[in-house]
Image 1 (spheres, helix red, strand yellow):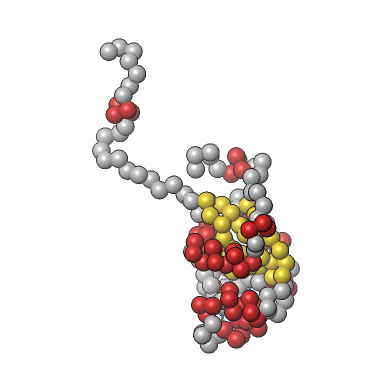
Image 2 (image 1 turned 30 degrees about the vertical axis):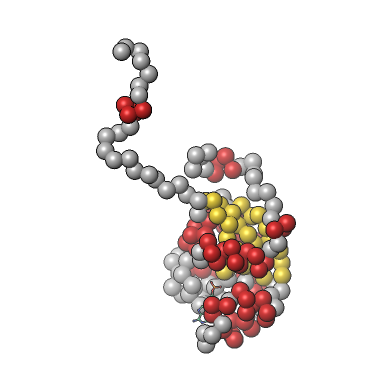
Length: 176
Ligand code: CMP
């Protein structure tokens, strides 16, 4: 019938319907480690996260104790490098941050680069600033499960702030 509204099937392309997985809004735990603090790279590295469009939703400067180190690095506690890692991570203050963004966990890990600064690609944070496996400047959660566990080690529920920012509408489309 002329002028009739198209039916739903008229609007769909031919072929099977493909469901696209929407990117997920995530929070991730970041530690700017003692080498980052001592080398005065804190501002430089936070600036990279901000410019990427990630939102800081919690942040504090703390001195990690051996007890907190053992909890944070529980999966490495039996590794030969753990005593040295504990000595390093407790040696000076760290900045703990919670970052929020679409697929923030993998986005931040990509921004950091490989664990060993010598192997990290140029352009990544470690690739640009680190030449060490231990002193690799930044820790970031490696999975949603780790992020949940690690965020709870450093922040209470009431320490997270609303992340809605005026510039958000220039960072991504409303349906992304
Ligand atoms: P991070 O991402 O915080 O997770 C574990 C940390 O242990 C890692 O960064 C490094 O700082 C450190 N690390 C990993 N592998 C080694 C290693 N072989 N020797 C010394 N330190 C290591």
